[in-house]
Image (cartoon, rainbow, N blue to C red; front, side, top):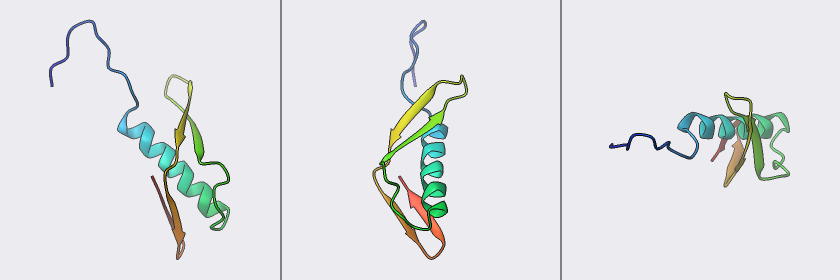
Length: 68
């Protein structure tokens, strides 16, 4: 991948997206399978800034949850 000098990339890292999906799945499990209520999850980035992610799907069954 070529990146021009002086230009910064924009967007969220894979880790930030995975953290948001994990938080959504843990929340769904803690609520014992109830829907998340709001399809938005907020996490804090390493610099301390909040970031909101829209959860597109969340499946809870047999003691596990999978969110994206």
